[in-house]
Image (cartoon, each protein chain N blue to C red):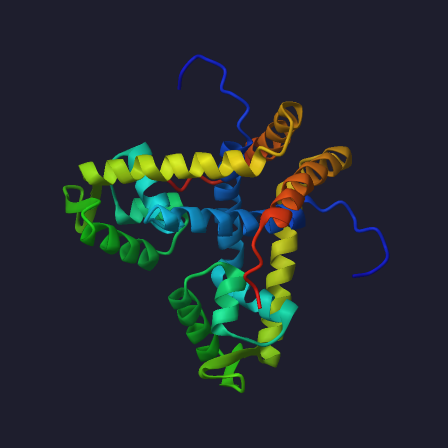
Length: 150
Length: 150
């Protein structure tokens, strides 16, 4: 709004870009019969294998209730099953079904396609530059971050 | 996992960085008595003024039910009020209270602080480069995006 030149603020641009990316991704996932939340649960289970809901919540950074609701919906649709956790009587292990693995593949394909479209405007040199910068930020975060996975 | 050099894939790095950023942001918002979802509703209302829940859902890219739940919680805590929408008998206008405006300020402060910490690892020149690259992507998206606001 003001006439002064804004300070260099990658955080603001990053958040705004993420907001737009998120909307585009949500539409693409919806068109494939999924949602970002469902896609995240499916792809985490696909990448890391069966786990209980608490571990899923930690991996996703979701509230426990959100994970429960999403897993409930995926179970109703036959994409995951729940079984007893031998290490925790109160917990249930969530696992992809065959249909869930297919849906996980769809989610990964949609994600890749959307990302290619979004970042496809950059030249290969610009992409490499962007990867390098984001990777610097990411590496720094990874070092400082407390490991709360299991 | 493989030994081959991965192709330049900003989408993957971007998503991974966002995942980490999201977790850090959620923790910081929780420490301030908020959540990312609550913070988003508060800051949108702060930036764009009172609006009905459908408009909020569109602006946030959230499901209608998610907005309802978040607004319910914010109303219980005295951070927003709801009143009749003169343009739509079925809708309710959501508005920040004085306490809500304070909470909105807190959310903005937390967001800025977290972003500064995350991107603070980059030199000023690197930040400028990152802003330029992200802005190229963002501008391209903005041009292609359908306006579904109101």
